[in-house]
Length: 384
Image (cartoon, rainbow, N blue to C red; front, top):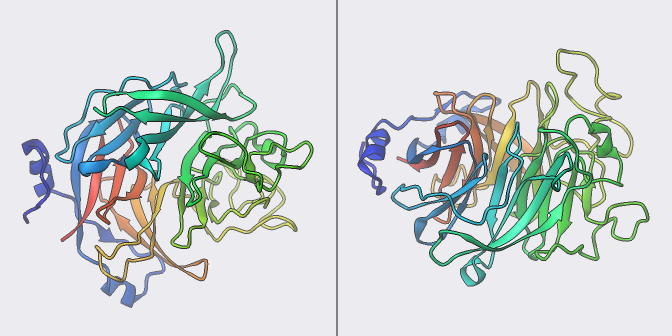
């Protein structure tokens, strides 16, 4: 097989040995299997240190975050730049570090990016929290300029777990940010006086939109959009412009939700999972006033990364599908969605067990992924 993408010789060798995805069907009909296109994983770049997110730059370039605290530009031919200057200090421990990044919808005009990270407490204090910053990518793409933190999760706690940290920019320019419950503070997810286990919505300047559901409610933090979440590492806009997200359950019970303003999604009161090691957690799977997930997994797949495919690059059968990566199994999941519900699920297995950390649709209409390891890779899902 020949690949048309331009890449350095070392990567071209790997491309020739690209890993073909095979269907390991879950509730997949014969018709669905027959329409699965022939695709291959083509390496674009490698040698990345625990990459967490990929965003797309002009001229086929990519912007990559590495969890230890570095941001790099990858060229269209797969060359990886030195770390960009100007990245703030991060609390790079456990699940924390430099996490998501997105380009502003007006990037062509303003070169603005948004990124989130685990922000250490001030000097002399303990703790950390998820923060959202904006910056300008320099014209030579070597540094971040005018860096400003526009949101910091409150309160900071001494934990290296459950930061959440996926960013979505809506059509109106406002930003959604997913925030984890910080693990030991799971009960905070049901309280509106903190940011743990929440999704927040702010303007690109960090202000509170006046139509936020709790903007005028005494005792509630005005940035909150929805609550009762555990740890969301995937979020995206649907074809209809609405926010979708998934979140890690405990032992079982990973969920897909479509967060509505002011709604309570139940964690840790209701869940389809259980305590680690077994045993009931919460009050059951349903309770009045708490939302049910659109879809859930038992056992857990440890979802990360999430993208709707709007292009027809893989044929009409995949257009409109929701793609989600699995950290636990190294699989790519394709979900057929209709009427706001998941109708069918198909597993596309890599075969080598790489942890899929992010999934995005590129400007070329193709799907891209990054894999989470000390020698992480940027991969393109290439139609044959």
